Amino acid sequence: MHGSFNRTFDVVVAGGGIAGVAAAIQAARRGKKTVLVEKTVQPGGLATTGLVNVYLPLCDGNGRQVTFGLCEELIRRSLQYGPGDLPVQWGGEAAEDESGRFLCRFSPAAYVLALEEMLLENGVELWYDTLICDTVVVDGKVVAIEVENKSGHGVLHAGCVVDATGDCEVARRAGVPCLDDDNFLSIWALEYDRDAQGEWLLTPGVCMHVDGVPWSVEKAPPGTVYRGVSGRLVSDFMIRSREMLREHYRRTEQEGRTRKDQFVLTLPGMPQFRKVYCLDAARVLEAGENGRRFEDSIGLAGDWRQAGPVWEIPYRSLYPRVSVDGLLAAGRCTGARGDAWEVTRVIPVAALTGQAAGMAAALALENGVEVRSLDVKLLQRELEQCGIRLHLPDVGLAYPGA
Ligand SMILES: Cc1cc2nc3c(=O)[nH]c(=O)nc-3n(C[C@H](O)[C@H](O)[C@H](O)COP(=O)(O)OP(=O)(O)OC[C@H]3O[C@@H](n4cnc5c(N)ncnc54)[C@H](O)[C@@H]3O)c2cc1C
Image 1 (cartoon, rainbow, N blue to C red):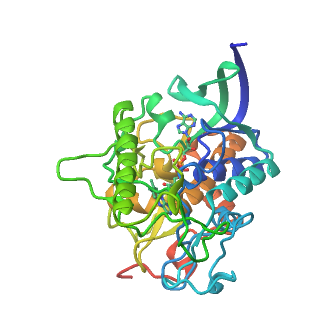
Image 2 (image 1 turned 180 degrees about the vertical axis):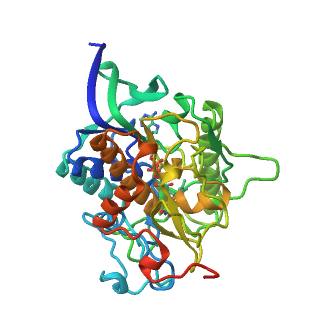
Image 3 (image 1 turned 90 degrees about the vertical axis):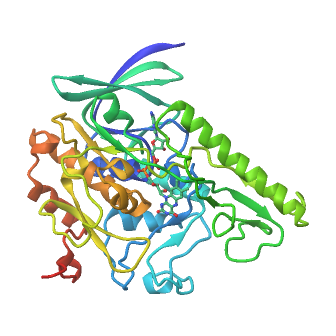
């Protein structure tokens, strides 16, 4: 029957991608009654439903681990039910990765099994197939989200909401200003390739063949902008990306491959936008701010594209510049612009900001304060207890020019 319902939680985590998973686990570990609300039917977001299958590095590219905490637990769990492994120099059994970096590939489906198990082990209530469709704001504070699922229309009251929807669904509905950016067209799919050989054979002949092939990334022709900011644009992106895949198979057929020896096995179940909306946060991380000290740093992130740069992530990038309370952002929703967003939007940093958001939400409730008024030193002490290193000198790095 289609009805209406009300539930109350300490922490409501909106969106079950890696950021949401980390936020929910951290809040639950702190003893908070936590729900994870997800519109698909599995956790992981882009990392699973979106078929992204490379857990990018936890290190600086010079042999030094910089990101710790749940980020590290989650990289190890990504291998629990799958065939991948970490490079030997990072405690695994796989041959040394040629980049020398602390990263791994994983099977998205295997990761779903591990993530869900981890959430349940930690006592997180899971609400799948549940669409967040509105936010309730009272006197400048987010107090609830509205959802739709098979049971009808529900209101989930919260002491604090973590927006981990990947595109600020909660924040925007609360009237919080957000930033947006362009995307290029790409499609990552899982493909059967009879001739493929290598470690990514899942069963004989089935290969995770997703990257490094000419069709996987197509730069937008001049004048074409791919954005995920409207229903029409999302649909167009999906149609165009699959058209690109059909073009690819027509091309390979002309080159002599047949659909018996090469075909697409699984397509992404969500749009593969890299950047849609992020928070116009109290402190937006800007390009070139790697190596900069932030007194309110919640952890460190390397640059997945190159060895060297390490970023401190300010706590202020997790809450809005405007004074809307009861709301934190995590993952690719946290406040960053341009090149800095390239660094914060990937899996390890989503895990880091998710954990920080979950911890901050729990501490704010315990101390009866709003998240923006939380004692940052207290937050930092608790994150350090979880093994997180906050500042460059904590991992033996100096500030440039120091
Ligand atoms: C093509 C592509 C390749 C990439 N390659 C890599 C890579 O190799 N390695 C890497 O580390 N990163 C990569 N990334 C980036 C990375 O995968 C993501 O940015 C990261 O996983 C983001 O995690 P998140 O939790 O912030 O958001 P998401 O993974 O987007 O999770 C958000 C979740 O919220 C849910 N949600 C959204 N709206 C609602 C709603 N209204 N109601 C309920 N639920 C909702 C979604 O269903 C989703 O599960 C890639 C991204 C893309 C697009």
